[in-house]
Length: 98
Image (cartoon, rainbow, N blue to C red; front, side, top):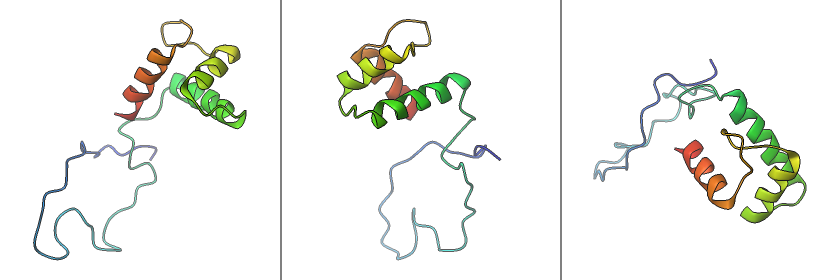
């Protein structure tokens, strides 16, 4: 299985005065799915963007402007075929992190 079909949206922990209750699971009782943080498989576009980001970081890019420059030099474009800007990359990363 490559993703968790039972993934629920994150909810803030609720205070609980009873030890061992609440958001903490008992060791050894929870099923550990390899891709438990994914609600669906990544698309080809997401995989290509991830690979391109790795190349950016490997080449020493550490700031948003540097990553944008590296993506544009690599020829990686936004989903609508445009060059990356700081605003568009920040929005795309925010969207993917949701």
